[in-house]
Image 1 (tube, rainbow, N blue to C red):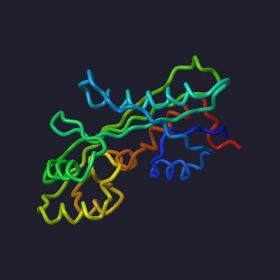
Image 2 (image 1 turned 45 degrees about the vertical axis):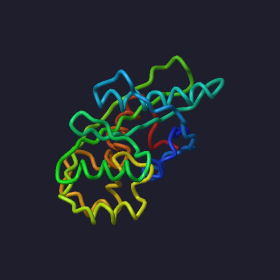
Image 3 (image 1 turned 120 degrees about the horizontal axis):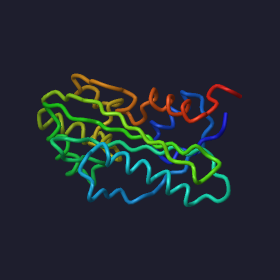
Image 4 (image 1 turned 135 degrees about the vertical axis):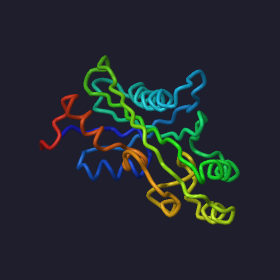
Amino acid sequence: MEPIILASGSLRRQEYFRLLNLPFSVMPALIDEAYEGIADPRKIAENLAIRKVNKILDLLAGRPPWICGADTIIAVDGNIFGKPKDRDDAQRMLSTIQGRSHEVITAVALFKGKDKTNPIDCRSVVSKVTFATLSDSEIEWYLNTGEWQGVAGAYKIQGLAGCYISSINGSYSSIVGLPIHEFYVMLKENGYSYGDS
């Protein structure tokens, strides 16, 4: 199988790449995550994922390998929740999403490799997460764990926040950070020899 550059420092995405037995290296794409001028949450996530792939392409010379970029955002009543800036921002996010449902959008962008003129395939998955009603002390307890740092919406579904989630509708792996079914389909449809040695 051909090596893939994962344009993300996310440990969850790396775990999924290992689960899929993909040869990969990590090269986080440090981009400005501003999205002014884009209203559709799905388009925002896709734009960010594509920009991550393009950032790595700009850094590589010659015939670049396959590159995967991904981005996860949370949408609540048309408002976008990315990674919280600080504890107060995380508290605001958790207070907003508790006791209701919100959308989690993960976009995956895939560059086929070899020829820089190859188009970037980008797809996104929308899932719904419902939080139980939380007391102020429950939110404070979660904030004290530090788990909110560096994650969209200030929570990790695969961590302690799982205690607070009453239901999900959609792709669990997408909520974590990589929709593995859709990613597998993307690899196959783009000619990646998955499973070959």
